Length: 133
Ligand code: ZN
Image (cartoon, rainbow, N blue to C red; front, side, top):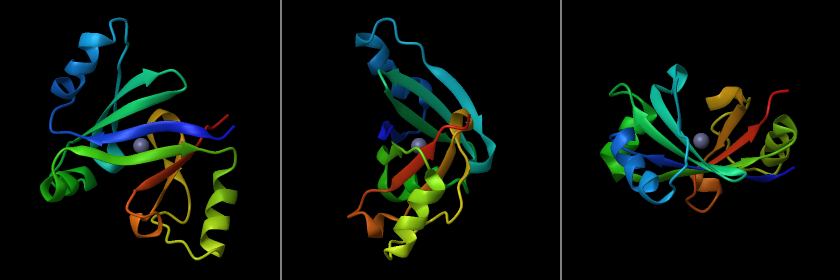
């Protein structure tokens, strides 16, 4: 099923960034994870079928560190979950959209993920994801 999987938010400090949500979402259980390939620490705050994904860089050359230097903290990307990520990437490429990842790679929670360039999506960095069975 296609759905909004998560919104990615670039932050300087995961703990500080999630405090405001913990204040009013009383029973929320946040999961923490490190994605070494992206040089980020991730906090995932579930919201029904979707979630907020907070991203804190672990190194200065992390893509998130570069984003923070350039744009500051805030919404970084949105992620749409699809049933067949290879098929989705193929359709996009055939229609001339610019892919950052031509092939899916491993993202948080063991999902397959791939990014589409914001030049092709009116300024929104778009992540596609697919659950791995
Ligand atoms: Zn994401």
